[in-house]
Length: 116
Image 1 (cartoon, rainbow, N blue to C red):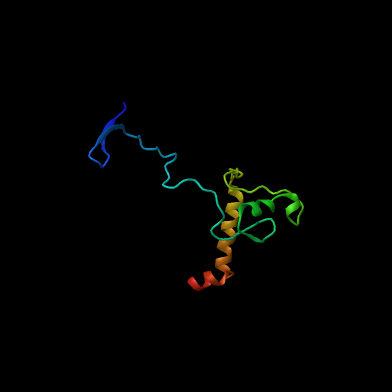
Image 2 (spheres, one colour):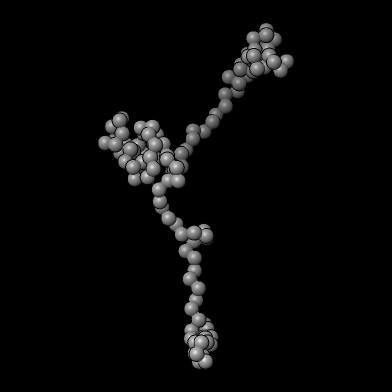
């Protein structure tokens, strides 16, 4: 539904005009999305140097931009699947037995020896 309102022109006249609808925000954030330079230098994992702009940083991930001569993939939003952990009860039992033997024989690290 369109809404109209009286506006005072300041010279004693009034006019009826359509009320402008407020612009809706494009996102839930309070600020517009701006991609700019880094606020502090970022170290490249390809060559170890620090860079101020994302363009220079991304250049080091290309084969001709790093000393290794190979392509690198920056990891950020990608998901990495970790291998599923399968415990080995036999190894765990042997490790516990070995730890108990170490404590009984006095063969412990200095940190643990300070506690006991």
